[in-house]
Image (cartoon, rainbow, N blue to C red; front, top):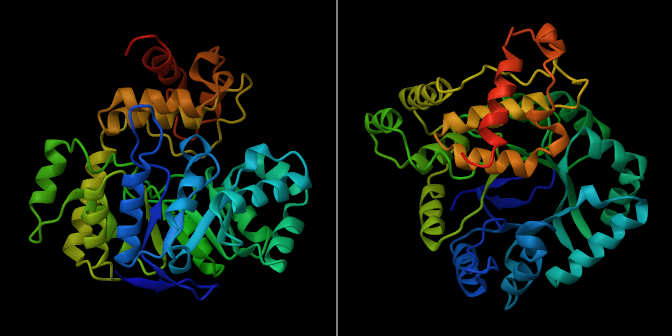
Length: 379
């Protein structure tokens, strides 16, 4: 296992963190706790020392399971991360209430890395109106939390605002070789590094999409490399080649995934990929991106939609369906993450978005296709 030193905290952290959002489950959707315990403890015994969970994972059961997994001395071997459930906060006291419940669930007296979860503009406005900064100062001072950061799910401009608003220790962003220009992306990585924040990467394998059902043309590119690697190994090596990244989180669901990721991360050394290898990853990326149906850059010039349509999010879901040739999964994510009031079906074809779009995209046609593809009963 390779380790890197977190910029502000000076903690020596394994480049692989165990994300506890995708534990193995039983037929009734509950966590297979014996197997999850075996997996996490195997990873810790092999050198992983960062365990990440959150209030909502597995219908709020991830934290209690993690608490039990870390008994028998394992809590002392790791840095434990969990997250403030931002969307439930209605006042300052709520923040303390949730943190105290999390400490109880996790059977610990402190959290090493505490994140404000899934920040976007709406949540940020609400939290800052309820004395978020006072809360963060207090929990570090009283010892319930060692380091504070945030995870981010929005478009780039608000990322800078959040970074500049508080003395954060670290941030967590979505980043992989395909999504270099989505959400915080490459610009966010650069800005966080410039500001001295530790950087944790989530979705390094895009939820497993870039490791499964590989299209023939993509696999042919991987097969052309002199050094043979799995798609997962290419994706992880590409991230760990960047010294600005301190660790990446992998939500592992099987022991086989744990073993594979541990082996890959034994070689997670900065600047270890050759120019030819980096060029190969870029060719793979461009081949994936060529499948995109509509070239939305999420600049948001189309917003606000007068009828509330979350246009960039809808277009991203549409593109994902074809990017990975998986309409069923893209539909499921669309229905899960985009509220009904913000879906494509709310479009009345007023044309205001197209008038404002600097890419001159046919947004109304795309939204009509999205409505048929994602909002009908059958695929």
